[in-house]
Image (tube, rainbow, N blue to C red; front, side, top):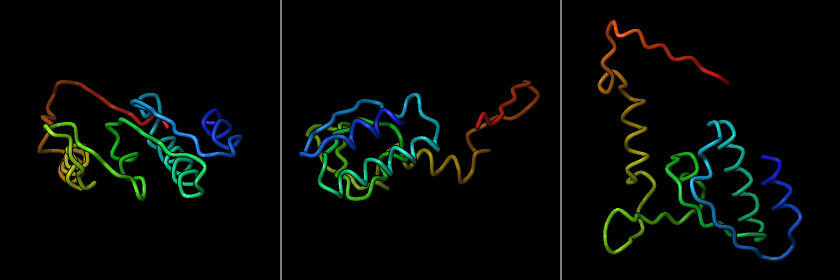
Length: 112
């Protein structure tokens, strides 16, 4: 995270950054920190970001223009209409609908 912050804070002119799957190695908490950095620098006019992501957290960036590449032609889509948002929302609303929790012996734990 510091790498992103220092790289962005040093720049004084408008710079464009492009990132692909920037959330891959980030925990949800770190994604929220990155989201704050993106928003702060975008609003201040220091940078613009072009990001390919599967993260509903990063997709939620205020003022972001979201484009879907799921159909031809590529078209803008509302945050709540993205497949990633809908899958996460439905899973969190009723995870049992998606899980077959029986005696298979799989255990998960929170690493944060």
